[in-house]
Length: 177
Image 1 (cartoon, rainbow, N blue to C red):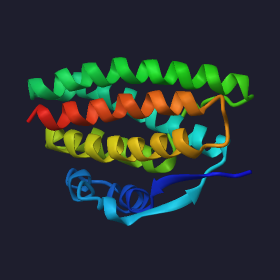
Image 2: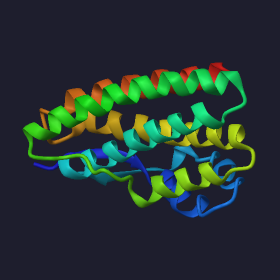
Image 3: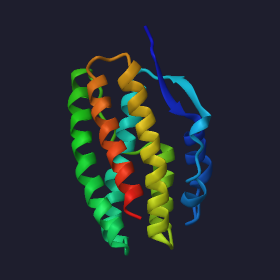
């Protein structure tokens, strides 16, 4: 039986529409409304692909932030995010192998567009924080929905842990400024 996982359609639309280039794209997309959450049916493979893309974006953007961020709070957050998402990536990969699912070596189009916009940003620190807010909220919804109603008993505990990690990172991001 398929179960329903929640994924914000507004978040996906903001990622697709708001990250086509330029430094302000990440800032414009930061005002994603949590009221626009619509149920989307996700298979284990679809959840796995989206979760892997989020983790890869988080790792790569944190590495970039360690190189380019001027704000010490952003550097500290990047260190936290890098460590956390290396851990969640490893857990996801291990669980995926049990289901014959392998993480992609590349991000999905939306996360790649966000990363490209971040790399090109003139005001790196502002765009980094705005994008982190978007992706962390997206991850909390994705992982939380799958943890509650995902079809795979192998992936549900991984999703629950990832939701906890992303929720803690979102709180840390909000406290740091």
